Length: 314
Image 1: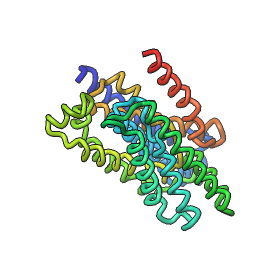
Image 2 (image 1 turned 180 degrees about the vertical axis):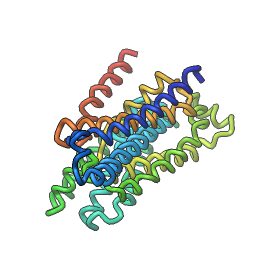
Image 3 (image 1 turned 45 degrees about the vertical axis):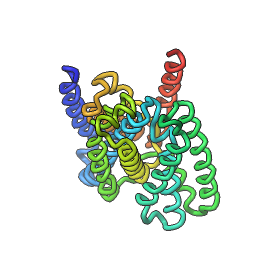
Image 4 (image 1 turned 90 degrees about the vertical axis):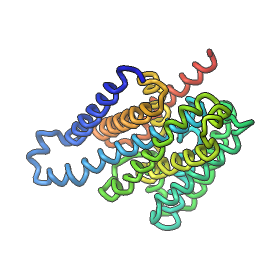
């Protein structure tokens, strides 16, 4: 552990609390005007507070899932969005919207995310390892297939098309307290993933050493994949497809706090929450409530290209 790690995590926690407070105050309606409105309490409590909490929970979940996948695959470019987990969750949630008017959306999203994650895992696995090229190509191929199925559902969805399109862009404009309660299991999944921090540290060496040190490698992989899919599925069910949070935050936090997953998980979770809270606040305040997924893709895609170029030079 680096000496500055506890200070960094404490600073991130304080920054998250301050960011959430600022996000509740900031918005299209200025604080001064907000105080004078008769409906000020309703705007704050029923609209902004659940939206900010949901953004923090989703950002936390995506960052933790990304950190777990990067550690599990020993690949800094693994991410729920890139390897198809988010696409699987989106397809499952869309099925729930089309067939059951949204009933059971979290369960459908979880099932889709789980199926997509394990499919990519088994396709990309070669000799007990996950080569980066195979992982990326498997994720792209599966995401393409899932996108085709999603397009077919949208084509046949009828009146649900508008709802599906806006939801797939990723955003928090229709968030209510019910959505916050749906998102709370993200914390449970995140704690479950954190319990495997020691195993991920050992797996960073190689699988043979991990087995000799008492780690049940295959069991740890399966549980971590299931928990990551669970967290991603819930996040997608609440906010739609929001990409690159699980790619950027673990990579940056690894540079700051080091590779020890006991400290990397909480740092990435806090940073992911901060990033998504501010991304949503900016889109809500300055861009007419543009879907936040558009903003995260705009700065996430160049970062992904940077990672690819860095690996090529290495």
